[in-house]
Every structure is written in C-alpha cells, then in structure tokens.
Amino acid sequence: MADVTLLFGIGATKAGTSWLQFYLERHPEVHLWRHKELHYFDALDHGRVMETIDQLCRKRAGLRDRMQGADAAKAAALREDVAEIDRYLGLLGRGEESAGAYVAFLKKGRRGAKVVGDITPAYALLSEARLKMMAGLAPATRFIYILRDPIDRLWSNIRMMAGWKGGSDADVADRANWIFDRWARGEEQAVSERCDYAGALGRLTRAVPDAGRLITFYEELFSQETARRICAFLGVSDHPAPLERRVHAGPALPLDVARRALAADRLAPQYDYVEKMFGRVPARWQSTAVGA
Image (cartoon, rainbow, N blue to C red; front, side, top):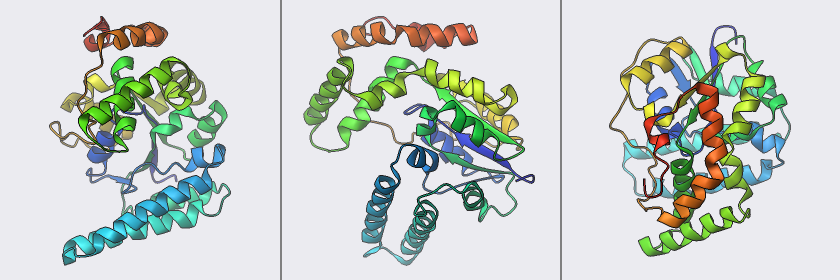
C-alpha cells in the first residue's frame, strides 16, 4: 500500500456521504468500489456476515432483473455491477478477516489512482481498537467524517427509514413519526447510536492521528472550497465538485414543533460537544429553536 492512500469515509449517516462518493468516484486520481458501503468491518465485528451477504444477493437479483429488456449498453453496465458484487461476495463469503485480501479488493482496477477507498457510514460505530487497526492498514490512511446538524440528521435518517416500505406520503409521514417516537422512548438503538457524535468523535480522535482525519460539516460540504480541502487532504489534484447534485435525498417531510423541541432537548449534549471541540458550529446548528 506504500504506493496508494487508503481512504475511509465513515459517516455520519445522512450527512452527505453519498454525495462524497459521487464526487470522488469521478475524480481521475481516486478509485472507489462502485456500489458504496462495503460494510466489511462492521459485518465481521458485529456478526452480520450472513445478513450482509443476503442483502447483497437481493441487490444482485434486482440488477439481474433490470438486465431483462435493457439495451446493450445498459445491460453491459449492469453486468459489470453484478460482477463487482460477485467479486465482493468472494471476499466477504470467507467469513473471516483478511486484511490483505480486503486491501487487494480495493486496489483492483485502480489503474494508477493515488487513492482507493471504502465509504461506509456505519464504520463510525466501530470500536476504537478497530479504527486504530484500520488506520494501520497503509502508511497513508485517511478518514473523513462529516457532521450534520443533529436534529436535521436524525430526521433525515428517520425519513429514509420510513420510506423503505413505500406507500403514500401520508403513510411515510405516519411511519416517520412512529419511528421518532420509538427513538424518543429509547426503543431504536441503531438510530440512537448514529446520533452519538461525542462517542464517534472520541473514538476517532483517539484512534487516528490528527493528520489522518478530516472532520467537516455537511452545511459547508457543498462548496468548491471544501472540495479543494478534501482533495488536499487526500493528496490529489483539485477537481470541480457537482455542487447542484443531490444524491439519495429523502422524502420532504416537516418535523412538527413538539417533536423538534423534544429532539433539541435530547440532542443538546451533541451540540455542546461539537461546539466545544471545534470552537464553533455552522449557523444552521445555532437555529435549534422550535420550528427552525
């Protein structure tokens, strides 16, 4: 790995990592897996290898279905998508960790790219020991963690979950409010874990040296200035960013006044932690009043 920089995009969930993937996979000096979110280390650490394989197989089946009736160019692209899933299934299907095979998987097809990477937001939930191990996989390893206004990020995460089953706008709104209320009662552990900036930042800063991590704000992500900062951090040339591009935007759905107030109260420690750590927060973070 001495000839390449290893990038980990570790979150936060619903804080712009899909846009980051879209931007970087179009950079001529960066090579990322085309499907995003390998979930390699969290599947191994949390005993979810078979579950992750099942999800990949369902995705593979969907791609195969789309090949039926597709024109030649589209069918060829879909075949490449399927082949990449098959290649990853060969790695994950071992059921045991192989750092060398994982790194080789990321490097395959890079064609001289200076950076290879894995953007998986769930990696923000990994242990300090695991993050430290990942940081040692290459002489030059870089971690990017994007912070978003805690209430906005929470509600976007919930809206995404509510939309998984489809249905009318009213159906999605009802499910979103139901998930929010479960979170408020402490019944949505996965959602709560993703709200914990203090825990994630603590583990990241203890495990990864200052030079190996870039922590930025979603509210400042979509600018050429931030794109240049990301490129400089990765040691690649400047590349224009698609600032108007929205990737995986969730359904538009307002958060009602009462629930916003409750979220502001529950998430106040996260606002305080980040402001203390950085000495500032974006203007949007300061607008946490009910109805903002």
